[in-house]
Image 1 (cartoon, one colour):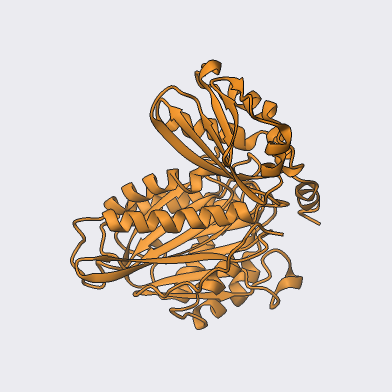
Image 2: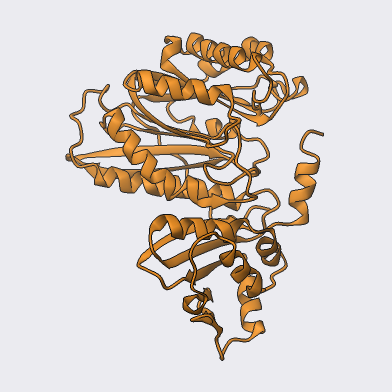
Length: 407
């Protein structure tokens, strides 16, 4: 069961964009007509584009092609085509051929040129890509194009996700109200940089591609690069951000601060939804690291705690085993002065300046660790920088899901 204590609000249409989906049986022919597995996002005008991609060295061809397209055509993107069920990764020379064919199919049904199309794939690694099954049915994605189809897009990129992930924000600038809507998928193989995930975000804010890219890179660090479920980074991770604003004829935003704030909120919520839906996850834990010399140190330390199997199994068992946490801190590779480290679980002070606090009892810690959601705060006492990382626990269900992933 996901750790989701609230109901997602219906995503907002974004002027300049329509979304459709198709059921192609990507993972198996038996699923054709039973679940949507291809997503098509079409811009009615030339859109500005930005992207961030996986840091895995064994990355899929769709990532390489997407990076090249954004580099060469970032001011003239018209569509995103994405599939779930097969990653089209680790399959040799045909990988690039199939990726290009998917782009061409997306361009054909969207009525645009292939060099205006970005693609993404997610699913099982190392299996032949069913391009012919996609070719037979991708037309459904075109005929279903609508401005308010974002939930269907989120459904169609799911793999082991238990629910579709989407959100929207609006902000004011230049006397107008602009919209940002995003969808994401991800549940396992989640770890920076980035996580095993796809996310597509669209806005009508009039912002040039190079400015979008700078903003997206910053936003990704505090959102998609700040989550971890299991410590594994995928071959296919992709985030695309498209803006229709300039193509709609609006004057370029000179002050983009409101946009960056709204985009951060969208990306952080999408990233947190991935952790909340982590495979087998029963706990949602915020790790807040402060007192670091710089933000990079704080984030790396948070990630080290978040990825430790011993820490995560303690979370799963509601066991306030703080010794595992200081073990992870010491394993972070960062310079640490143990006598300056303090730690809290919610408002329960466990360590102060490297010493167990005299008022702390194990029962106090256990009560916090038994919650579905709690915050672990670590202050290493070396500076003023801080960072947050979000993670979950590691349960028997995670093993079951991944042991049977290809069954």
